[in-house]
Length: 190
Image (cartoon, rainbow, N blue to C red):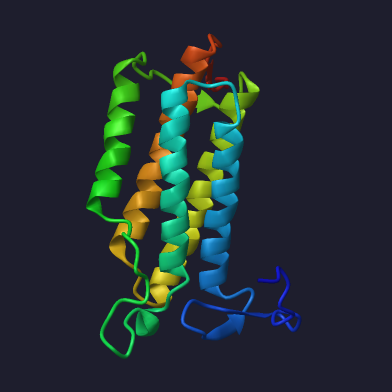
């Protein structure tokens, strides 16, 4: 299989199922941003962090590929003519969301209670988490916009929302693990 097909040379690309759309199409923006998020998560995973966190991040990366596949498949192309699902994979579902919530809860049990907003930074690895969180929120906004145009599986939105919470909590957990102080936002009074 060649890496280049030349089919996108005029500014279009194919969704799963063959429909050709412009490369700025809302679906493309959505799953392209999910792909960007996945790259940032890979960057976090490549840091010197606990192996159990690395394993969780690998699961998340796989789930993001699944989520991207779901976004790349228009509703009218989800079912083949023979009645079978086009995507013959386990989709993002409530259990994926619950797994993220469980991971958040486990990390949160070890963390001090938040008393202030926290500024991104303190350590490069922590900053990578905050970058990933911001990209996750952008992906979520793009999927919300896409959902206004055509119905998207509700679990995609829930997953992205929960994943940004996971990434925020992970930043806090890694601050603790790396023994760096969280940078509290304390607004100056007039």
